[in-house]
Length: 177
Image (cartoon, rainbow, N blue to C red; front, side, top):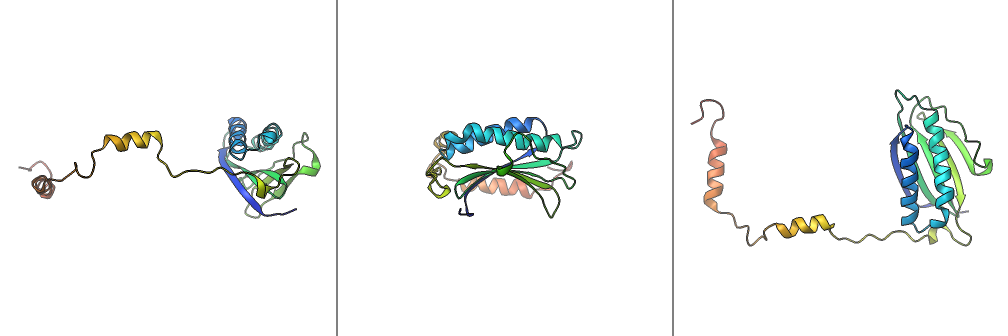
């Protein structure tokens, strides 16, 4: 297996119960961009279990941050949840197979819990179609640009500029005349 990551996406969340739903949406969106719809059900389930483990170990009064990360590597999709709390006590969810899951205590504190899901048969991370983004304006930016006067229409009157500079150079305060 090639251990090189070919694509990665991550999302930082607060370790509250709502993080499970946010992670679900994040996984669905990322996998749809990567055209890996065949993995959506397994990946959302695994991510929900991992994020749920992080949320369960968090103090609800001071939950801290978690990072949900998806990585395409070799012939698998790796789902990681990093708990940044120094005293993280995450435990592996019993609902995921042991051969595809692990937990690592990080040197700087915190923990990383992960799960690997195999890519569809015959597909490697290097062959996954990644999204292509065009250099184009959003519809809102296009409307704004069309509403602005062109550079030719925006000629500046030197007298207006002089009046602005004169007004700015006056002393401010109650004695202003």
